[in-house]
Length: 176
View 1 (cartoon, helix red, strand yellow):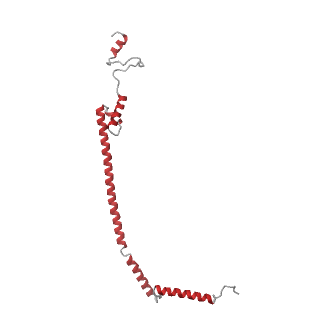
View 2: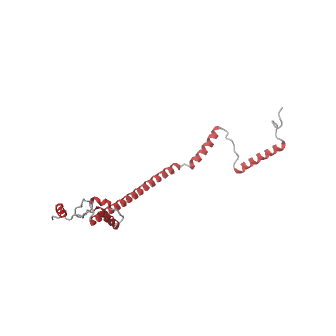
View 3: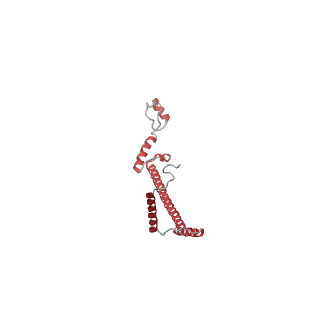
C-alpha cells in the first residue's frame, strides 16, 4: 500500500498551474524566435550542424592571418627595441671609457707637474685637478727622501750633510 504523497497524481489545481506555466514558456519561445522543429532525418541534422559550423568558421576566417601579422609585429618591435637597447649600451660604455681616459690623463699631468714617481701615479685620487694635486702633495710628503745621510745613533746627532762618511767621522772625532 503506497504511503501518502507517493505515486499520487497532482491535484487539479496544481495541474492547471503547470499547464499555464508550460503555455507561457511556449508563447515566449514563439515570440522570441521561430518554433523549433526537430530534424526529420539524420541528413537534415547533418545539414543544420554543417550550416552552423560554416557560420562560426566564417566569423574567425581571418584569425590565422591576424595571428601571423601580430607575431610579425612583435618580432619587429623586439628587434627595434633590442637595437635601441644595444645603441644605448654602446653609448654608455663609450661615455664610461672616455671618463676613465680623461681621469687617467689628468692623473699623469698632475704627477708630472708635482714630480710624483711614475710607479706611484695610481695612488693619486680625486674627482678634479685640485683634489689630485692635494693627493700628490700628501703622497710626496710621505715619500720624500731626507737630504743627506741619516745618523744611526738613535737621533742624538744631526743628519750628516754632504754624504761623505769619512768627513763626518773626522768631524765627530775632532780631527777635521
